[in-house]
Length: 185
Figure 1 (cartoon, rainbow, N blue to C red):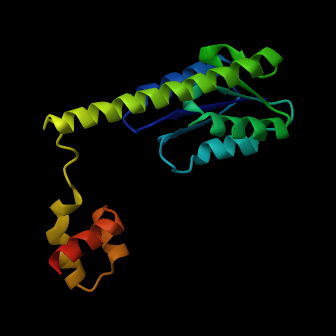
Figure 2 (cartoon, rainbow, N blue to C red):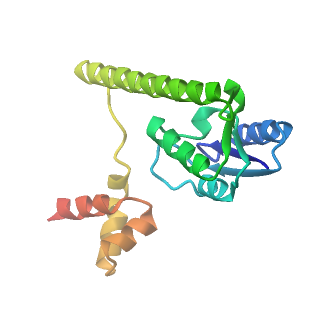
């Protein structure tokens, strides 16, 4: 069976998920798992887990691009090990890679290493740019959103709620609740 997996990072990327589903359908996918969750976050990617569990011997998991599937080389290798253990293969449409062939396996490993290197270089450049902007007084950083809710935090605390419940209700981190409350002490 040919199984597809589509992912976008945010709910705003409706066209992106639709395009992936269209391409996966055109590639002959009989079942498509799809989700909208960031690959960078450590959030569980439930549909990917379900797709991997669904695969059986002789199946092929198909994605449109490598970055839709794996966060890093080690994550990719873990996915590949899972597929191999199930007797399944991986095909990446945008790269023309199919792990059913030895060349496909080699190319996937090499290209994923280059992709991870490229991402690390980009992050390093970003850090350098932020440092330069800070030195020049141009970098302001993110506005402290939790502190904007400090009055609400205090009110809920006065109502007898605990930090976890306050954080949940206000959509902020528990540490931010403690930070607001400790500023009052």
